[in-house]
Length: 449
Ligand SMILES: Nc1ncnc2c1ncn2[C@@H]1O[C@H](COP(=O)(O)OP(=O)(O)OP(=O)(O)O)[C@@H](O)[C@H]1O
Ligand SMILES: [Mg+2]
Image (tube, rainbow, N blue to C red; front, side, top):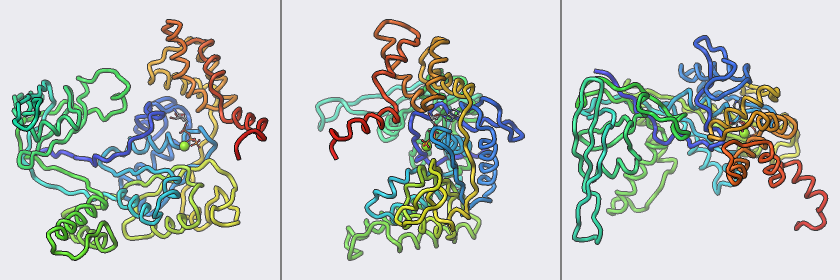
């Protein structure tokens, strides 16, 4: 009986500027390959990240913290994305920006929730399932007396594995799950026969086409064995998922008048979750998986948030905290005190620090090429040279941002390739941060205050 792993469907949606990254690009000995998995250079930091991933997998980093420190555009956020990709979907990875904490109505509540989303509970269960790669999918319509137009009546799909194939007819409930999951040919899916729950397990290697939306997606081997089988299913929930379900049960009670007041997730709910988790883990029915809470631009946090972090890192259930900052010595928000990265000493002392250094011209050139490839933007050699120059003299991020507008400009003159003129024009139309700062300085008397 082979097992099936089901990850947490709420994995972070990364901003598309990092869509070219699919992992840390390390070899089997943990050494960084010069260019791999979409990453270029930054060798030491990538190897350090590889160790972090190993420690997280072995459960040896719970309650500890990592800090990425380095100038803007040196790949701190990119490395966090790579770590998340390496860990896979079975390890919770929560990514937030410090500004979200600062602007939250209730900071403590926001942070508590983020912490609890980053801690997984892995449970095993034996289920009857239907699973395979979708090779045909057709939705059926039926008419309804209540609606003027036909409604979804079900679906016909064909599932295949290396050893088996089967036509499956499903009802409207399952068909609508297909639609909301965007199931298409080449997806490996699993349907729970008893509950009718549909899960998408990934995309099969052979069937994938080259396109930028799926390049970084989890690709899996063509499944083998019977379509219909009894399997051990491994699921990862988060503490927050359990909080939500306990709170929902309570609300259901209160609707029927069993409880006097309606409550959301409060301390009592969380306590109940913790007790349940303690029980099932001590009985060996479930395993605790400390995931990652990534806080980008961490220097924006204030002293209150830092105290919460430091304290929470030492609690019974704590995820691995990864912080990123591009600030040197600066004031700790909410105080008059200056400190490295604007962070209090007692927090800094608990962090392992990974430095990210500015890129060489050669590395910038390779990053430009990878991004252009990812965005399907063919560049002339001269254009690559110019973008590399812009990347090293102004900023890497600015050079990468010019790619899309330059493509539009080149398309207007019916060119297939983006050339130097297109980039020059794009850079005339859009300025980088330095330029706009100088502009504001020059016209400061005319700007609104
Ligand atoms: N080593 C690398 N290989 C490939 N792409 C990279 C690398 N480093 C950075 N990039 C890409 O360059 C851009 C800028 O990098 P990123 O956003 O990670 O910088 P950062 O250090 O987080 O900057 P900031 O401090 O301003 O947040 C992104 O599109 C990122 O994906
Ligand atoms: Mg960043």
